[in-house]
Amino acid sequence: MTTLLHINASPRYVHSDSLALARYFIDSVQDSTQDSFEVDTLNLFDDGVLPVFGRTAAAAKMAVFSGQEQTTEQIVAWQSARAVFDQFAAADAYVFNIPMWNSGVPYALKQWIDIITQPGWSFGFDPEKGYRGLMEGKHALAIHTSGVYAPGVPAAFGSDFSSTFFADWLNFVGIHDATHVRFAPTVVNGDVDGTRKAAESELSEAVTAFASKLDAIGNLQLANS
Ligand SMILES: Cc1cc2nc3c(=O)[nH]c(=O)nc-3n(C[C@H](O)[C@H](O)[C@H](O)COP(=O)(O)O)c2cc1C
Image 1 (cartoon, rainbow, N blue to C red):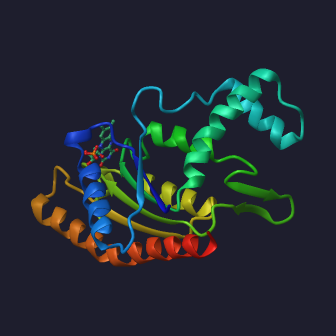
Image 2: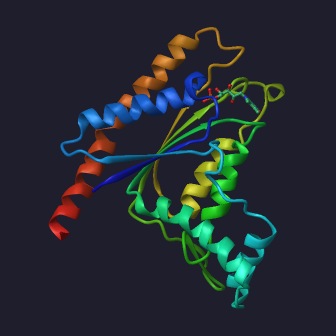
């Protein structure tokens, strides 16, 4: 069955602007597809959802890179990371909601990225040609929110290393078909409702294309079964 993985990078749940928009988008896509699809949700800030990626896991990664055998401890850490990657790889499409935190992405999202971005899993490396993303044929929509920063604000109101980093990472792992929608209910925004409606209408415009990609994946799976 076609699977959409929803990655929620906000811990604010009922108060989250980015999560509300993600749900709006997913509901609209569900209304627009011909076939039903599965929605798998990963709340990155829920307790115990992500394994630590520290000393042991980093050593396990470096062992892979240098062609050395992993220790028993490293194998266990590597398998925990692999389980997170498998959920990512099993999905056909992704919806991300990402609040800006200190000009970057929330740390739980960075942790998830650090867990799943591994050689031979989501990217390959060739000493002559460089990196190559392995997550081909996937589709993504990312919603970015911020509370002070908005495009065009003076430098004193902050910078955006969040959407730029995230767009670059999607590209790095081979997800080239990505739509980014921004909503900035900022302290200097005099028309928050108007901007929310604008974000919703941008999302609505993306629904048909996203839904038909899911339908196409579903049809392909049916033809191959
Ligand atoms: C820890 C933290 C750091 C934040 N850092 C920034 C920031 O650097 N720039 C900014 O414009 N807003 C920042 N914000 C505000 C959030 O990006 C903004 O409120 C966003 O809409 C929250 O999305 P959410 O409601 O989905 O959680 C920060 C909020 C938190 C909780």
